[in-house]
Length: 423
Ligand code: BGC
Image (cartoon, rainbow, N blue to C red; front, side, top):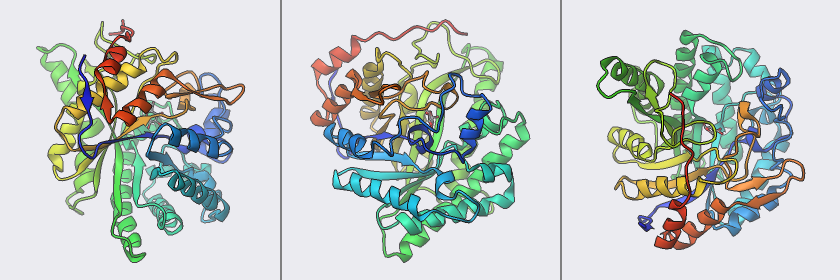
């Protein structure tokens, strides 16, 4: 079986988001969404893995597995519980976490916005309302003022397309709207936020005397393919979906618009999970392909295809896989998933320097609660105990070996993917 050697400068990390692991927050729109009954298994985001209480244990576990990069998100609702009132205590807690990470040799990549909002911001219209953008920028400045001496790398916004489509088109996420115009407006407004935040983070850290600042956004991209290769309508659907869901975002967020043409990233952040088979504008999957527990196609070549698209736009930038992972509740095929995706990246010749696995400890999976598990570490919801899974041990060994030995590869490829029946 094929072994894999990591290219020089390629390293592995793990990623998370505050709402999915921290718990202890009743002032966010996600707590409100849970209270309204939108989380399938009734899991409460106020509880989750209580990472903040298990900070030392989680960080030590991460370090013991050789993990040297950690992407994590901030909970805006805790940092600014009331409009314009920031909590020094909360920033101190985050500083404590970052200091602990640094002590263990783990470098932080901080996500400023990862899906959740303070309820007060949501009630003011969130990112839909152009007047509110300055509120996000004020938060950004506060974050840099408070953490800028410890953190050089930032993701401004996580997956603006998923945030906008899930919240304003599909209605699965708060605020639960179904309106295409609003969706497009949110995407546009978040783009403005990203570009302004990019400038401000650089300016502020520059004033603080640092020249090592790196800023990007985490773009969710899928591979899109026509359901039948020779059907022109399906081709049109694939191309249009590709453009609306991700192409326009890559262009505008990275390069600006006619009003602010420029360069708004120091790395290309990609979150990649799956491929969509297009035969309309809703997601569908090819029949008979490997799928995960949520029915998402497992398609490793797609990660390279998406990286290639980003790379063509800004060939001088390094690519960070800011998320990649899979829902596999019994950890039956995650090792193979990781192996095949990492292998595809390492063999692509593209300048991919980081791979952050989503996620570390099984977490609160938004509307799926704890029914979909993405972690390389198991979380026992009753005892809160963390146990490294087989895929976690594989991950640790990849880090140790700076690659995958033939023996590890053979074991990974012996895992069997479920086969989908959807169409
Ligand atoms: C999000 C994560 C989420 C993951 C798996 C990504 O779209 O950024 O928050 O847990 O997908 O669904």
